[in-house]
Length: 179
Image (cartoon, rainbow, N blue to C red; front, side, top):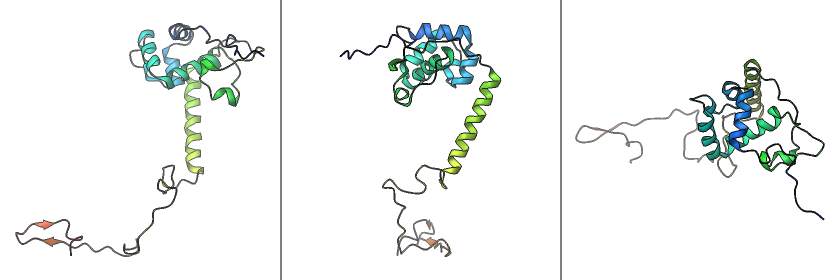
């Protein structure tokens, strides 16, 4: 049985990061890449050299660019769930799938896509039952709600503030805790 994995059908096989960027920038432009990927190396003083330098240091950004290359520029069908968990360079592209022509992208489509993602994120936060804004929903690290001690006043009772003035005439802010 042959245990060797065939990566040769992956368009990223043997392709350097610099050549990948040159191909995409020549076809799309830095402006389109920033609009779709939202990586600031494509917006602020964009150049192939500075982008390569940033992408080599930043795994998440490099993987995002490589996935964009596979599924937008090479127009391959989306990866299976199992393959999606792997970095783009480690994905196995089935033999029957061949790269196609690059998708036609525009700034208007990028803006529409960004608005759609913002709506989905807002709906996800709204529908998750998360009333406090954070993922814990008011729970502590153990997953339980914090315990209120019986000695603390409830929120319906007015809290009395006691101002303590020391013998030398200064206000003591810790007067409530001293007895």
